[in-house]
Image (cartoon, rainbow, N blue to C red; front, side):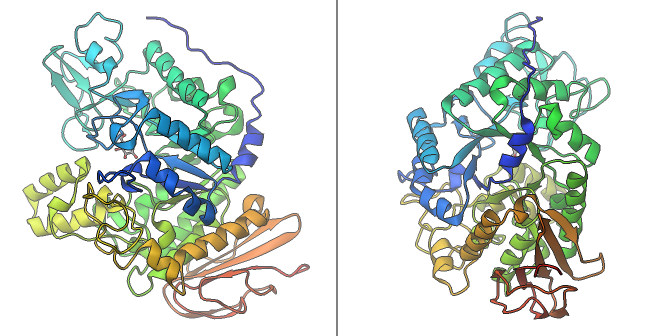
Length: 547
Ligand code: NOJ
C-alpha cells in the first residue's frame, strides 16, 4: 500500500507557541481515580467537572487526562479499542464535550492522552487484521511466521504472541492485548492523523503522546524504539497546519540532549516538549522496584543539568516529579513522615520555580506520600501483578510484596483522597481499588483545614509564578555547588531577579551574597532570607535592585 503521508509545511510560528506554553500549569488527572459522580466506584468525566473549581482555585489552567477512550481496561485505558468513543465507565461523548466546554469557559485547556504505539486487540483494526494475510488491515500490525527476535514485553514475558486465528505471531511491547501498530504502513499514519484531527475538531488543546519514541522501530537492528522514521512520523502527526496551536508533550525516554533537540526544537515542527525521565529513574531507586538511600541532592543535580541543557538549546522543559506510573517522589528522597508538609512544599519550590511547564499529578498538591499494603490483593495493575509473580519465583513473598509496595504503579493510582470519610469522599460506592493506606491522615479536607497546608503553598507558589514573568522566562542561575545540602538558584528577567532557597534534610545557616526583600513565599513563614533554615525549609524573595 502506498498512500502518501500528508504533511503540510508552512510558517507554523512554533516559537510563539513555545512562549505561550510557559504560561500553562498542567494538572494530570487519572480519571479512574479522581472523582466518581455516579456511585459505581470508578471516577468519571462528570466527577472531573464537579472538581474544576478546586483545580482553578489551585492555579492550574490546563488538565491532562489519562486515556478516556473505549477500552477493555487491561492497562487501564492504554489499551484502546475505539479512539473515537468514550470508555463506558467514564461517561459519554456528550460528557466529554461538556467537559471541554466547561474547561474553555473557565479559560482552561484540555490535553488528551494519545496512544499511537499500540491498540487493544479488541480494536476493529486488529480484529480485521488477524483474519488473514490479505485484507485492508493485514499490515496494520507486525506479523511474523516465527518470532523474529527475543524482545521482552515491558510487562514481562515475551513481546511476541501467537495468534491462532491468523496463524502468526504479533508484537506487543506491553500487555498481550496491546498489539503494536506498524507505522511503516502509510495507512496507519493516515489513520492516526485522522484521530488527531477528530479530537482537534472536538476542541482539545493538545496531546500527551504515550511512548512516542516507540512508533518507529528497526527490527533488523534490534531497536524497538527511536527507529529511523521516528521524526518523520511525529512530524506527520503534528507538523500540519491544524497542529500549529497544539501543545504536544511526548513521553520519551531520551537521555541525551541531541535526541531532545530532534524531538522538540521549534523549527522541527514535531513536539512542543517532552518528558524525559532521568531524575525519575535515578532519584532514590536503583531500579523501579529497588530503593536506594538518597537525598534531594540527586534531584537538584538532575534538575539543574536539564535546565542548563534546555536553556542552552532554547528547548522547552517539563517540570514534574510524579505521574500515574510513578510512586510519589517525596517518599523516595525526603521525609514523608515527620516532615511531610515541609518535604512536599520544598520539592514543589525546587521543581516548579524552575523554567519549564509545570505538571502536577493529582494528590501532589496535598502532599500525598507512598502507600503501603499488607496484601497483593490490594493491587490491580497488570505490570504489578506480573512482576509480583516473577519476584515470587526468586524471593520470599514478604520481600516480593515490599518491592511491589515500593515500585508499583498502583502507588499512584489510589482514589483521590477528598476527605477522611469511609470512601475518602471519592465515591458513594465501592472503590475499584484500595484507598490510600494513609488517606485518613492525608486528604484534601484535612490539608485545607490545617494551619500549614500543602495546597495553599502550591496555590501561593503558582500565583507568584503567574504574576512574575521572571519565573516564566527568566534566566536560571544555580548558586549551590554539588557538595551543598541545599539548592539555591535565581531567576532573572529584564533586570528583575528572584532568589529561591531550598534547604535539605539538616538544619543549617544560609547566607546569600546579595540583599533580598522579605520572602514572598516561604513554607515555614520566614521573615528574612538569611539565617538558620530548618530541615526542608524553603523561601523565595525578590533580590533588591542593584545587588
Ligand atoms: C506509558 C503509560 O504511561 C503507561 O501507563 C502505559 O501502561 C504504557 N505507556 C503503555 O501504554
